Length: 115
Ligand SMILES: [Zn+2]
Image (cartoon, rainbow, N blue to C red; front, side, top):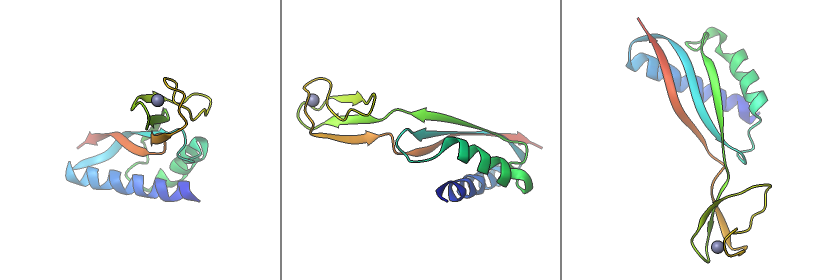
């Protein structure tokens, strides 16, 4: 279960942040997830709600933003956003493209509640 380990490391990160800022709790956590990251968003949310109970995140809300899949064309060097999973450059129709975004998971912000 990939999602469990993601949630565990997110909570870990929150605990470190809270300690650094002497916060008593985490208010919210915003992450961005690539559309092709393979992460099940609903499952990730469920995991977070299950795991957070005994942690600094017990009252925290998790917001997840989906990131588009971005291609870089090797022929014309144009960056484009993939729609409907067509891995073709929309400018020159080359299939020689590399995925440069859409598989990542980033923490965008952590909001803390100070003492
Ligand atoms: Zn192109």
